[in-house]
Length: 458
Image (tube, rainbow, N blue to C red; front, side):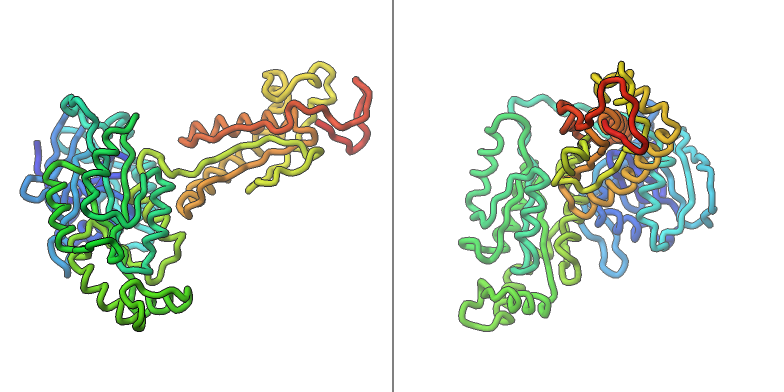
């Protein structure tokens, strides 16, 4: 077991050690990554131990749950141990095309690269470096020490959403609902325990709960709420507080544009209600686990940040559907992307293949034998793997990709099946639908007759 001068953050169950001299930007970079959805493991000092050939990082007890923010002070931030997959050096000059070296930590060799912590693209580079150079550590995201057996399921994680009226609470709750949270708005504080018992008694794994509490809530008392949260945490309940803030001028403008009255200023200017509400909710803002200022961000950006921070185990991820179809039967109405496969050799003109579909190996092999097939499918795959993460980050829930040929029985079916296999291998789970595979072709040619010049059918 070694204690080293470093900061560690984790994504997807794998930790990155940020190393460098004091002032090199370790804690600053950790703060930016935590805001992006990463989990803090330890700040300033990291305990690294060998557990069965895997280097595990954790926080020294005295530093657990703490993050240094220069100019602000020591702030509370939940920490959790994780296996180390990569070391990033922040005080060495980065190389343009590096080959990852290794650093011996706790007697184990960990890949190591150097990055500039103050580059504009550092957050993207850290995530890409973890994917490209980080150790796979399959299964290491699960704690090696099994949890003690209990007679009932553990209480589900809970998230309180509060803040200033007009700052985006309704948008946030809808986004969390899309992330499979059970959402309740304006829940009286006295019903929190009732909601917990109801969630624990349900069938199947407990869903996380998000509930909105603000100054409209009956008997709202921010100080009492903070005290109740402390008690629940002491009882082992995973409960966090999200506070949505916004500049007074922007809030006033929003109430004016929507022609809604501020809940605390029914017969007075909105500015008076905003001032009163800011005072009432001040204890919540001070105690919040995460504060999001929505003054200059769109609803889509807010949804994306919530997805990055509170999405779990693929919940709320983009749902991708691959659909084969025939142009002869019309374009799919819900298609977001359309790819035309009519440039490929047509199995319809092979007598033995005509009754079959693109799901049959013989037809798939015939389509794949076209010299244009491999480069086209490779490029489509690369394009989709580039686009899908972006659609997910922008909060898109569904994406329909249509693959067409003339009749929708042969080429489009074979290509759609191949794309499904490739996307699944890349970590996606696309659905596959063959819309027109059971329909007969529209051509009038007799069986065995050669196609006319320029004519393609199936």
